[in-house]
Image (cartoon, rainbow, N blue to C red; front, top):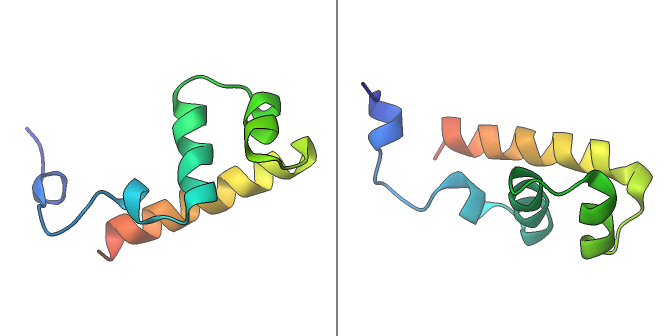
Length: 67
C-alpha cells in the first residue's frame, strides 16, 4: 500500500523541478544509458558523471523531502 508521501499532489514530481542537466542525467540513466552515453548527450566529460549523478540524486531526494 502506498504511503502518504507517494500520494502527494501538491506539485510536480521532484524530477521535473530539478535543473535540466540533473533531470536529464537521471532520466537518461533510468532509461538504461551508460555514463559515457549520458556524458556525450549532455556535453559533459565522462569523468564528471559519477559526481553529477550523485548531486542530481541528492537534489531530487531533497525536493522529495521538502516539496
